[in-house]
Amino acid sequence: MIGRLNHIGVATPSIEDSVRMYADLLGATQAGQPFELPAQGVRVCFIDLPNSQIELIEPLGDDSPIHGFLAKNPRGGQHHVCFEVADILAARDALRAKGATILGTGEPRIGAHGTPILFLHPRDMGGVLVELMETPKEAH
Ligand SMILES: CC[C@H](C(=O)O)C(=O)SCCNC(=O)CCNC(=O)[C@H](O)C(C)(C)COP(=O)(O)OP(=O)(O)OC[C@H]1O[C@@H](n2cnc3c(N)ncnc32)[C@H](O)[C@@H]1OP(=O)(O)O
Ligand SMILES: [Co+2]
Image (cartoon, rainbow, N blue to C red; front, side, top):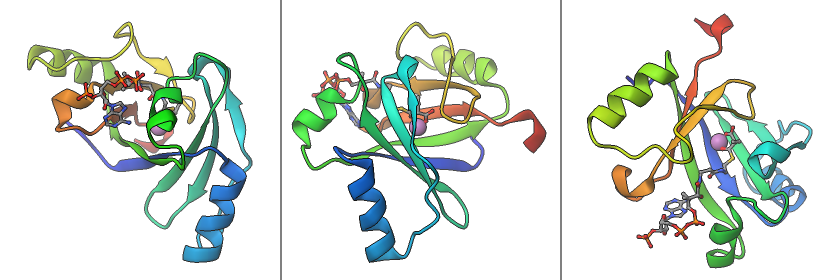
C-alpha cells in the first residue's frame, strides 16, 4: 500500500529559527518560501532533501491541530511522517477494514502539496502520527 516517504513533519514555534538551524547545523539549505494553510491550521515551509523533504509546521490560528503538541513540546519536535499512496480512498477503506481510525471526518483534505491527505490516529501506528498523501498524478 504505502509508497515513498514524502516528508517528515516537524512542528516548531518558529519556522525561521528552524530553517536557520537546519542550514547552519546540517547544511540543509534548500528551504522554500513559507506559506499558510488556514484550512489546516498551519504555516508551512518545506526543506528539500536529496530523497525527501522536511515539512516545518507552525500553528496558524486558535484552532490549529498542533497547539496541543507544542504545549507539550514547547521547543517543537518530530510531529508526523507522510507516506505516499496511489489511491487515498482505497487506502482509507483498506485501513478502516483493518480497524484503523482515520482522523477528522474521514474525508481527504487538500494538503500542503495540493493533493488529498488523511491522518491515521497515533494509537493505531505504535505512537506515530502517520499522514497519507495521494501521489501527484504527474508523478505516476
Ligand atoms: C495538512 C498540511 C500538512 C501536509 O503535510 O499537507 C500537514 O501535515 S499539517 C500537520 C498538522 N495537522 C495534523 O496533525 C492533523 C492531524 N492531527 C490531529 O488531528 C491531532 O494532532 C491529534 C488528534 C493527532 C492529536 O491532537 P491533540 O494533541 O490535540 O490531542 P491529544 O493531546 O489528546 O492526543 C491524543 C493522543 O495522541 C498523541 N499524540 C498527539 N499528537 C501526536 C503526534 N504528533 N505524534 C504521536 N502521538 C501524538 C497524544 O500523546 C495522545 O496520546 P495518549 O496516549 O492518548 O496520551
Ligand atoms: Co505533513
